Length: 93
Image (cartoon, rainbow, N blue to C red; front, side, top):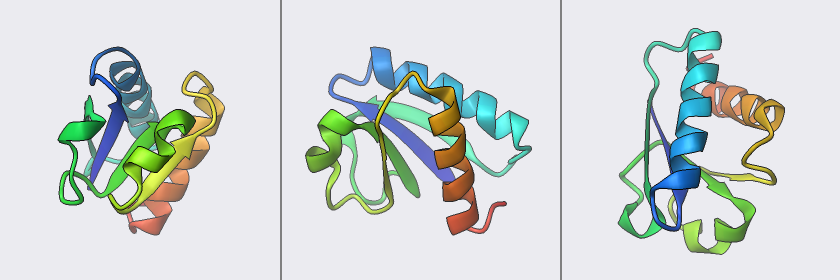
C-alpha cells in the first residue's frame, strides 16, 4: 500500500508529514506501506492508495480517491488516528 503526503510545493510540509507518517507506520508495524511526498499538482488517482493533505488543499485533492484531510499537519495524534483508519480501510491493519 502506498501513502502520499502532499502540499502545494512538495517541499516543506509534505516532507514533514511524510516523516511523521513513516514514524507511525513503523510504530504500527506496517511493513507493506510505503510513504512518499510530492506537490499536489503532480499527483493523480493512481499515485497512491491514500493521499494526506492539509485542510487548505482539500478542494484541490478532490477526485484523487482516498483523501485524508488533516486539520493540523503538526498534530501527531491526529495523524496517527488517520494512518490507523487508512490502514484498516485498506486491510493493512
